[in-house]
Image (cartoon, rainbow, N blue to C red):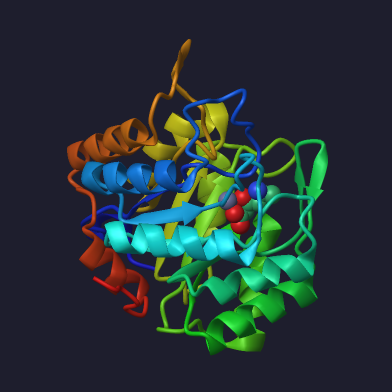
Length: 284
Ligand code: KMH
Ligand code: ZN
């Protein structure tokens, strides 16, 4: 891993929707194809280079139906140069077999969570066999995984995955710490830095996100420690105390401003594509 001081720019990922919030409770959540594309365009303009997508159906419910996934990938790809990442985590109710089919939509990147974890009152299942199947299929299809680490044990599981299955397509290893999920790794700088200290040497870049109130402390900690940033309404619905997020792009714009102040301005999409070694699937 590069020391913090040599990381010259910041990869900003936006996770605009997630699978947990209801449109009825959060009308600003982008859930339709039009809202997703509009969000992607605005977030790219604000400094994002990667978009982590969960898709909703016409009733605004989370879905892994192939036609909806393809529509989302194609729509964002046609309108932006963002690295398009599909969630393979889906919602905690999604069956494992269905989550594997996400790769059929041919995204640039996919999430790959490195183990099972508590997820609020539920459990987010990621058994070893599922991780291996997903990883091997991503390698075969030349899709770059982003390894999601919710727990310190997930860092250790990533070591095992690389040992057993080798490096991802393109040879880069990008991980994202998801901190502050109730029952999982806390959203504190101490927990984040413990995870960073355990990263295998094969890891070429790491980012972090803090759920809810952990949002800003984790942005600050990640920037200080040479990490990249994930922001968005999947993780955080409040812009400030008593003030809800009105558009994902304001979270991206604030992250970009903080990164610039820290002398690590946002990566362009071209730089991000190179940093992650994604295959160029762009159509425009
Ligand atoms: N919605 C969570 C159960 C991912 O996108 O891969 C899982 C999640 C992780 O958000
Ligand atoms: Zn997600």
